[in-house]
Amino acid sequence: MPSVDVWDIERDARKWPGGCPVVAHPPCRAWGRLRAFARPRPDEKDLARWAVAQVREWGGVLEHPESSQLWVDQELPRGQKRDEFGGWTLPIHQWWWGHRAQKRTWLYIVGIEPQDIPAIPLRLGKSDCRIRLDKRRPDGTHIRKGDPDYQPLLGDAEREHTPPDLAYWLVELARRTNVLSEAA
Picture 1: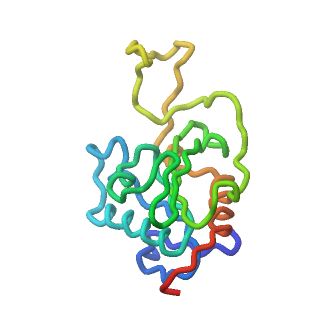
Picture 2: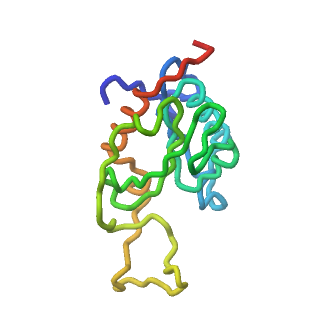
């Protein structure tokens, strides 16, 4: 992506010097619904906490799965609430940007008002795949292959994939943020 300086596991994101808004997507397996079955590296929880601190200091956005326990751990706001950093949470579906499953996601955003974010695409209809392992309907009955409401489960690689259009949208969102850090 043009004009994007990526700090991943190889570059060790914790060595990022700061100075500009950030798009943060720390590993989520230690924070998500299936965290009891996850085997995260010992430092992954602290990396997510560090990412929250960077968004709060420099502005930008942090992406994590819906219901991530990072929101509880870091007291990130939900609903119409804001935190002391002006941060707020925007729930999205990655399907709107082209993911094959709904992939409900929470964005923690600092440094921009809701009316100033880039336009969110409107995509009507129903996704053709699912992420969750739940095979029950709300009434408790089982969903089986061949049922009209059956949806195949995505594989690991595709499940973890961020649609390119969403990645560009997140970068544009971060570029629009305006946070003046005392450290700058």
